[in-house]
Length: 66
Image (cartoon, rainbow, N blue to C red):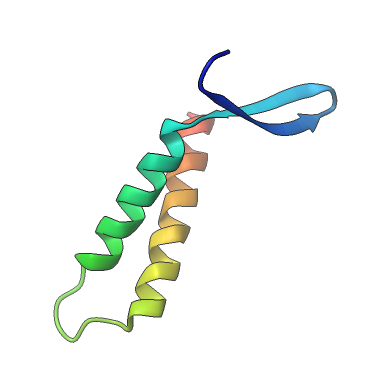
């Protein structure tokens, strides 16, 4: 299918991800990093980046398991 990126195979089932997921991943992670959901004092930038990436993986897994 056009626009999909092959991630490999598991038990001969092809795993593909549409390229827009990468754009969404970057935008939401950036949003969570720049505008943290907690008030001042804000956590360090490294911690916010890690939390943003973790939240994205959780959203991705929840979306595909529902």
